[in-house]
Image (cartoon, rainbow, N blue to C red):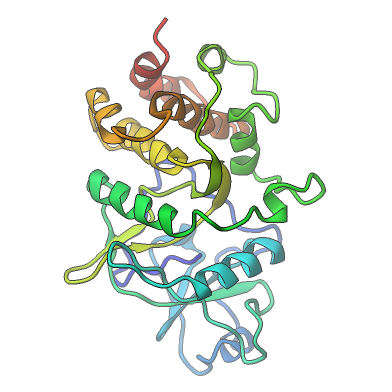
Length: 290
């Protein structure tokens, strides 16, 4: 889903953002045909500062390269039917003039005002819990279940590695985390896997959940990833790891899996270096003590 903020303030980018779909038009603006398809022909698109530099606003619409037909069409259909709640909002997906969710390599969403604030960890978690409660009864989409349709980007692969569905890279830190893996009893559901930098705040309105990368994992996983991100990248103390998830079933184990997910992602991206090891060391020690 696009970068929908109104002031161009981008989401957390210390964590490598999810890559654009193969074949996406990089930094080029959507062309006239795409703009016309989404009902904003004749409006000059303006690049937004967030969204990896590939997200554009044209009047009331935000456009970005889509994530492939299966994910994009499924997500837009789900969010189009989902009602806003007192605890969160979602940007409305925009159809083309033919009723499709995609035009060429692009998808579109209604622009909403607001800005991300990764320092507001508890507010992000509250919005995430409300969102996850609202989608808890949705079924598992084929691209998260059918082996022939599984996504192959770095984040999807790392997610499967963290849950024992693919081998983890050979690495002392991941070996240590793997030794701390334990079964999780909480049932799986759809979750948002990148909450911390993808919640917009604005005065007088509920937070808006944007950029939903869907995963099928135990309830609480999305919040665990957000908390790990907050400690690793936002200066939140390790002493907050457990209190921030109080009341969440299997919370200590979800933290282990969330950290394995983030570190495996860095491995797949070729970004797990000495600096990254040092940045994550305190959290590793906290969630997987020797």
